[in-house]
Length: 397
Ligand SMILES: [Zn+2]
Image 1 (cartoon, rainbow, N blue to C red):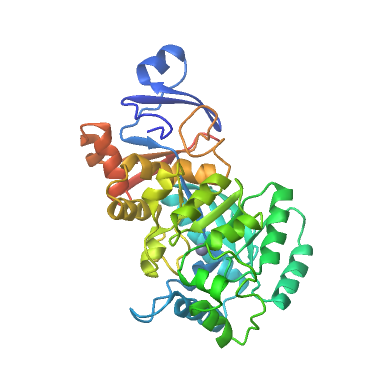
Image 2: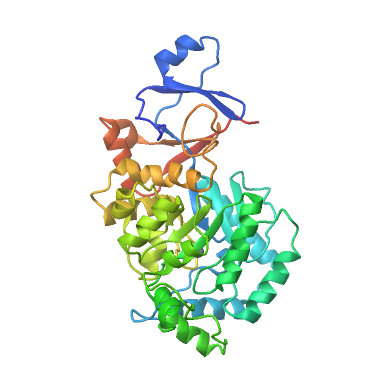
């Protein structure tokens, strides 16, 4: 299942150490490469899944439940902060839990992930998946912005930084971080439109985020944003020069058609996190409309604090259920190619194609072998949750 092209029944992949050399039907490949040793396997070969949004440093805290059905996302953020403050976890405990979560992601078929953490976790020797880590910064007031800029300016020049969200980060701090990302040619990832109250805060200075800042005694010298266009937060980001092809907007649940058009025209990327959105009851992202605008969103799990399963197969299955008119192939593309393109790593990930990584996912089991036609296989993979039998074919050693 190359993803970038149609399913190849009785297919074959030729690999040379870490890269794919050729893909096609076994017959055609065998005639081209008659002397290459053959490893036979039944089942489905897939490119690695790409988890385009995870917070590994939060793994140590486990799920943080919503207090009640009336709780807002701000109540949940308060619970998360309280858990963080009271947990007294050591740096080693945070790192160990993060490394275990990364290993679990790899075991579930994730070969590449974009990690957004509030601390530097270093590299994980026990996890073969590739992890791109961005240090997440926020600062809702002028004083917090000054502190954040001082922290960033003292970091090693190669360390990659990103901004948390428009509701938690001043306009100038977002611009400062985006400029740094552009200079490094790095991806700038931003939580965006996860909750309706984000635009209430930015445009009117009201809603649960305004209350949240007030309760904490934070001086509201940032919100509402002076002169913000009432058309919405996306227009505000565009005017500040935040949106371009290296910007990844995460969640995007509450967005008008006009805002989606701005995102599409700016060539920014979108990452959906359906299981986290369900857990926090913030709504369902308008996937069909993003597809109509010619965008292929990426998929991410977000952190275990808002997603106990942390499983890309569950993300696909929930999308399939929430958006029955979206083709199963599209959902599989989101979990693979969509993430690779959003991370600008589609030269190695996202598809089984010449030049891509030779770390290939092998899913097997009776139900896949019994599938009568390719469509049935794609349906099984996208709607059935995590396959019971799955392993990695790795040739890079
Ligand atoms: Zn997140």
